[in-house]
Length: 118
Image 1 (cartoon, rainbow, N blue to C red):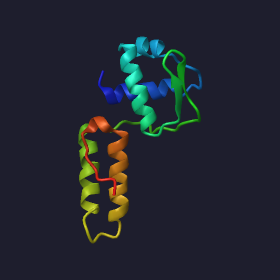
Image 2 (cartoon, rainbow, N blue to C red; image 1 turned 90 degrees about the horizontal axis):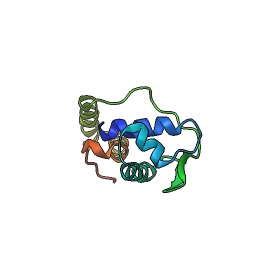
Image 3 (tube, one colour; image 1 turned 120 degrees about the vertical axis):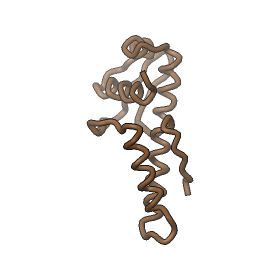
Image 4 (cartoon, one colour; image 1 turned 90 degrees about the vertical axis):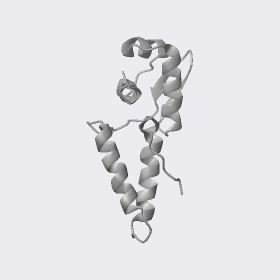
């Protein structure tokens, strides 16, 4: 299972409002608990309202609405290409496009997108 699909599945599991241990999530997803720990650290770093600790479990602090679909690699590249085009100097929406590209790159680090945070 690819990392982006696994992260999506983790968030979907956490949306039920219950406490989930890394071992439980690892069994569900067919990975090691160490992988779940790394994934949870990454999810928390992206700003998702995830609370928890190794050995105790993880939970979402507040409800989270996710879009019903995931982006394919081609869709993601098309989005990035469009945002880079709009972000060119002289465009009135350049600042917004740069900000959005940075957010997408931060939320999907496995995509390989690089964006300047400024």
